[in-house]
Length: 332
Ligand code: CP
Ligand code: NVA
Image (cartoon, rainbow, N blue to C red; front, side, top):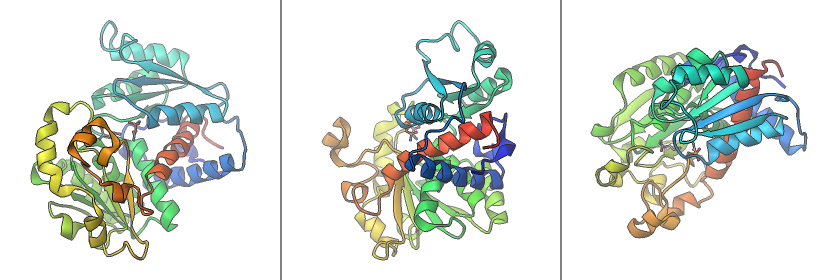
């Protein structure tokens, strides 16, 4: 197997922390680990590695990805709910980081402020991975691009359209992830939810050197033409619940439904897939959608053969495993 050995000892706070080459290497290493697991090999690459997982926000996939990745390779992960530990209350983030750095080999953090994950990395002395903040979700984007590569056997030259809340964590990381992999990225969102212009400029520069483009538009019908990937996320991210009514009003015209998938022109030929980081508000999935109907995606798309959302969720585990091994162990 070939792990990106240059990541040893390093943190992943945003995708800016990876070179273009390291991003591709991580995806390919994750694919090797996936095959290895399918072949029934139980490894020991994370033997005696202890991982702290700090969660200020809820999680299913991210938490399980770390727990299973660690267990598969002989390591262990400790779940630390922010409600149960002193972080940010009786103890500063810097002091908590120094304590965890004396006991653990790596820290995954999910929470609100990007500053918190930066402080953990600055003071712990061990690799820290961003498992989602208000600003970014880098481990998600690695799994997303692995899933795209599994389908198309390549990344360079493809077109991905993200449609929905254009300034959220998932959109930000996906934009940079696509740029690094040579995937042309279109962010389709109402003007009031446009991504930060500095992030767009940074991603554009990266995309250019990889022969790709970055675009922002508010016109779904035009945006999706020739798309290979249609991607959406929830309209209301964790911590923004007070904006629910306004978001639903703004984003209704940006729902991913069969009409929109058909407008790509790629549905019949099987040249377009649907992705969503999950959890998703599709038709009667939850109490909320039981009352209001589908929000960001309809059931006919979510359940269609073009939908690869559960392969994408599985790939969270394989890519997380690749990241843990590369940054705590190095060569594998
Ligand atoms: N996609 C994702 O990060 O899922 P969780 O919130 O369940 O971790
Ligand atoms: N944008 C979503 C992603 C969830 C995985 C949120 O932050 O809630």
